[in-house]
Length: 193
Image (tube, rainbow, N blue to C red; front, side, top):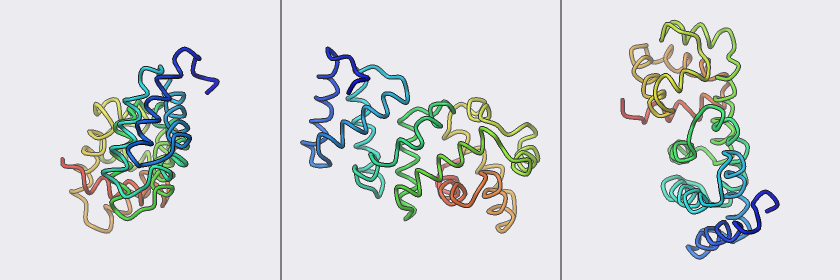
């Protein structure tokens, strides 16, 4: 790729080839996904193998193909990077969402939408968050919790005290729209608090 220095491109190609040899995709698809993630996260070519491993584990643990992941993940990586969510946590979250029978593209769009809503929350979402946490709802809440998984665990703990109907309604309104709520409700329900 033009964004990888020529002298470092071999590292990316090696990681892409290993992904293809593993039988999960072709070299072009692997390269596209790996380079796209590296660009979004500002990574060096030396991180290509780690990115490839993360993508492989996302596919292995989730219900999605490498091609589905490669074709959609780019819509969420910039938001995840801005939120301070490492690619490993993004991959683990996507795997979990897809195991709830949500298609890869819908899972990725839902996560992106949820993160986008946190970057510029609606007044209603901010009110709900303030009633649960006593502070403003924004992306810094993830960092305050420690990381994205801890943040979701905190949401689980605080919303578990609500009655069933109001709990789901609060989660959908908190994350901004039905797509985000659909994706993140299953994650919140499945993280261990």
